[in-house]
Length: 452
Image 1 (cartoon, one colour):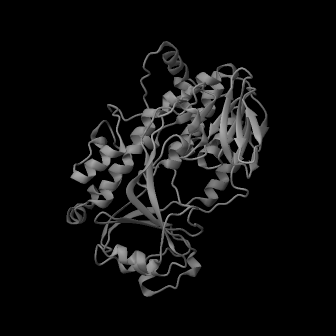
Image 2: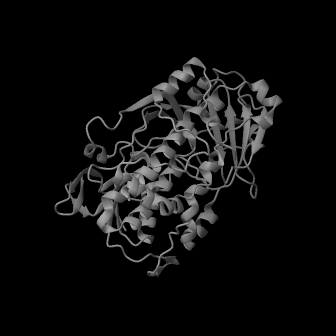
Image 3: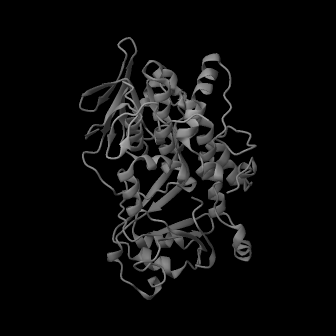
């Protein structure tokens, strides 16, 4: 088995052992989960890193997200990060309830920077051997490779062949989101059993119902607010009226929503069909995270896959070296999917996991409550060990040269980062929405080994 350990050690900073310097300049646009982890991993792998971020200041507020072992496998290389992670970790038990509050079951979970720089344009100048990111203020930043982690409407889309990137479309689903500090809540009798007391574990309750599900997350220290550019909001009483399409909601959760000190965000869940082209034609710009692949919240995997992207592309660039940047990004594209190699690794795995967002909606919104209560052990969301046990750094190290050889010769590369026995299927959002409209079950989680 190949190993990503360095042959000769580089410098150590803050306990982080760097690889020998590669001479590769990496410019990262976007300081989200994928962008920041890509910066860390590219630094550790010996690359020179700069991050451009549109926001002028740091903020820890926003929507909640979860990460599984495949996303934090590389944390062990960063001692301070590991300690901070442990100190801030929320590790809740997940409980399932009907919308009326009837308990179904509970499960353990399966497992450099320039702020205020919004990138609006990318250019590849291969003759000069550089790639350029231009900001909305006309500033130009040069690099050997750019990692575009700037979201669904990434400026990198303009580099791709016309028509190769599907348009973003609404799914018809919406997510109503709110978050507020616990000290704003009056502890009514209904809330005594809902919120965890000091010293108790955090809780997540998943309420399932008729074409509607609600996820309640209570932590000891958590701050959240709606994202910008919101399309619509509800007053708490308006949202409760919407919930009452299914009568007799659990009074505990209704009491909590009624006390929300702010409006509730009604966020349209938009999606972009899977597409293979995550790299620019010359391979010196590669998209990761939402810029490459959109996820629905019900997949519980958007942040995870952005993190896997980050780890994969850093290792692919190291494996390929400065003289092979274009091939490295293509290998990542293949394995996920160096930039082309990175994309080769990743595409099939990510596309399959994207699809679980629609399949999990079936579980949460269209269940037989009586059957679930009678057979609680049979109900709940599952992701499969093939998802959360994946080691993206090791996978890139083991498969880089095989994927690179396949790309250069025009042969197919067979990925092993899917469920055992799985036959990969291309799919579209339109097909999944039509399946749901007709009430047809999905065969995704019976295609190969999805056991935990």
